[in-house]
Length: 593
Image 1 (tube, rainbow, N blue to C red):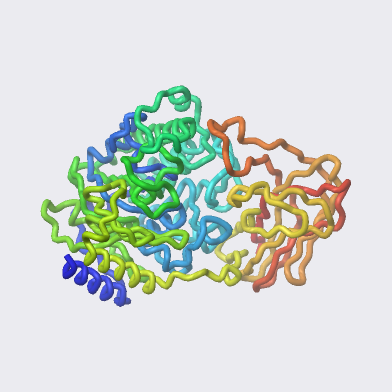
Image 2: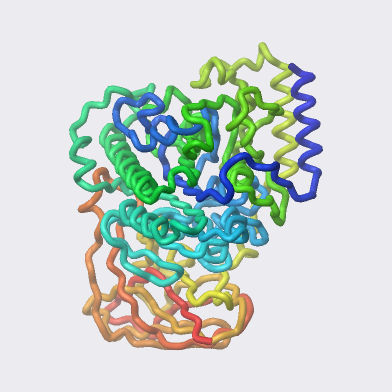
């Protein structure tokens, strides 16, 4: 065993020292197949009837597995942004500058080649509809990462799933109905429009991430439902939260069924690869196959995900793969299946899974999967997991990680510790200098740039509406000494129309705002009250921890000339009426020239 893992270690060191581009193996499948990549948000491995959960029924998602290939040991990262970065690039998030899930830390470095760019360069139409969570401002925006069309939100979570404020290719728009249904509608339109062209459709759905909102059609069957399968320590489980999460998963399943029906109606099922997975473990304690850990954990329960891939008559039906695999494998695998050259700016970390898909006895080299978050690193081999405390578990016999076998398998323990140490050194994990990563503004190739409250810094009395920044706004503006600033880098000099999304109580009408960047300033007096109530709670099936939201209204602040360079965009008030200023959701810059 020791010899085997020393060979693995040597292989990994050789691979990691290689700086050449990876070349895809010849694919075995339909030329230029369509690809639909569906990513759930905070859905656990156990949140599917296919995996044995009798608390819910997911026939349409299950059908992808039954009609295709399911991976029994597929691993993502513990939280959203890292998984998405790996899925999009085929590279470990830890080497790409991702260090947080909000306020800019979710962005992976520029210069990475994305899966959308590979498909777009091969003549595919590309679209992403849903939660992006890898950067809001171009060139981090999905339109700048290879997606021709984007509809949804770029932030980490959203405050309302019914008719919410969203964006379409940078422009602010209003959603229609329940968000997952709306995103699916956009996906169906894209499929129909491109039925005669090869397409790559990315559907990163936003559920069952909180807030726990779902239409009554799905909630009604769960609101008082007895849960026959529970988390192994049922005292930690909140049954109402679980019911809401499972109702949201059944809504996803309904929409997966709509997609499948559209493919059938258009005769595209035999030429479309469908992939389904989640971005991390469950967002609550609920049944998850007896595994230890949940979202945020590097243990099995925090990182094991369903992974199903199907294409009628092109991929085997009903095949189960026990070999370990991970998020970085998606890009090289789909590139191979679509006969695309794997021409990337940086070497991919993932492996083409085609041999596991097609071969009964594949020639496959043992490997390890790395999970990392919050200073904790875990390593998964084919049979064992070394956790962040360097305790060793035989997952083939102990999925719940209950018995540490370090004492009985010291050689394996030492080998995995050496592999972990080598990987941490190779990816060079360290604290990212946040000040050196300003928010880009005014990319010359794109009209719109958002500066949301999420990315701003409050000064004085101003506070966030919630400690979780992603869907927050700024409030409690009470003094002319208060201000909000954004650390920005104007990419090219130009003139911009600036809109502010605000609320203003009637008593605060007359407040004069001042927006300054370097030597340029514009002022605007707020002459119209807009004082909507907080919303969201009326649709919540379980109390939330994130911010409630408001219906913010745009006001045109005027035209501002911005000079290329880095500095702070600062919003102040020249006067405050009656001791209460406005509330701020975002600034929207539109390039005029």
